Length: 328
Image 1 (cartoon, rainbow, N blue to C red):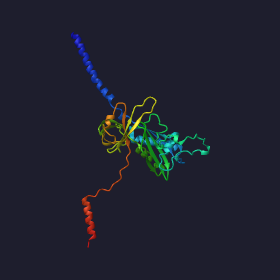
Image 2: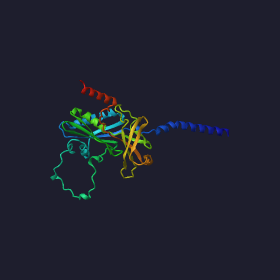
Image 3: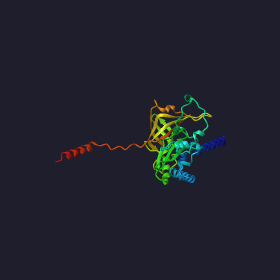
Image 4: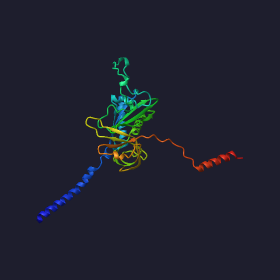
């Protein structure tokens, strides 16, 4: 009997030691990998036909651009840059602010050589989606961000970039930079790509009008610490991504008139204020089947305003005007 009790005591101590040893492993497994996951960025470029933009120059341009972006963002970005495939050239060209959408395309065949198309009544045709808001024609595999880059010419080079976030199926506004010389085109392209980039976050908590966002790749320190990817005052669009059934596309809903305004940037997440035109709190819609995301929204820089004149300054100005007017 005594031997049996000693055996049970040994088994109990072994179980306690096993639980203590397994606790760090469980904590390590529970550690979120979202903050440790880099963005897989694909930059696809269309060039205006120019004699100096040879195929070899374009290959060197893509290599330098990928190297420059990798140096700026470090481990947070996994970048590839290449020429856009044929199906996406028109979308790249449509980004241009100068000229027509065909500025970066090869010359089209004469219409008299085109085969006749079957005419369909226009009243039976579905409404066409805006060309600039359609998803990329060819999304590369294993890609999170597709950034279309158009290099055009109008009294100088111009690089225009626009990002498509694959997870949320959303376009960012175009960002454009000019380059008066060919040697400055690489810097202009890198700047346009960085400004078109929209950070992605997940909802960690939502309580009424307060939210906590977990920023992707936030644990991966970029090489260039300035500027910070997210700052107080930045806005995020709220997007709900539901689970897709087999064989159907993933349904994505961008909640209208709803933004998360960053108030504080912390290591463990972004403290945000929720501004929404939706009636009632949004936390009642949270469930385990949908993924709640937040995509950064580019905001135009605020116009510089003259400093407001104080009453003392107004009084001093009036006194000076009176003294100048009635000075003997």
